[in-house]
Length: 293
Image (cartoon, rainbow, N blue to C red):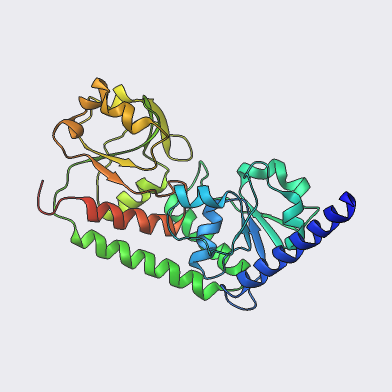
């Protein structure tokens, strides 16, 4: 009896998964390849190309860290990015699985399910913005929508040019951080998405220190004290950190906290591509005070 019940449950799970997949196929364009991905940067770009993947790893965390563009409601959650649910992935029968180099160790297991395509964005050499454009075109070709990739590029560049025109002639240098815990932050500089956006907006980054190839350095909060800049915090905060900061004398001595000029932005994927670049630019320009500083 238990074996029979287990069998029925598995059949029901398979039927339900098939139904969800069918519902999902109606959210994208007919004829686009059925793709799955573990990488949020690839996922956001596919959504922006109107060719969303059938499955993504850690869907809830995607929405918590990336924010927009949102994944379709029918997107299947593959579980952890580092340990995806291979059985569920196999049941979906994707035509191709997309990963970034970070997940290269998983490729041998994923290749048993479908061909694996590795697409890189952040690399030590090259211009970050140019790399984002290249990735967009690569994905456009892969989903057989090159014209959508060209449109996304043109729209994003036009939007950033328009946002730059809205800025005052002079704006204080910015210091962009994201909290890891109550005493440490990622501070963003050269090689990253945020720097690429600042360059296109004509804004100055106050962080001149070294960064890794993702475009950030991990530093203690005390290292921010001597920098003359408007502080920009990108959410989300780790659990409990906001409460600790409210009681932290070190944080309260930060100039932007003392004078009330601190800017807090909703979640934006700092390791993203054009959709995240556009989102960050919109949020930042909207948060900056009008007029000369």
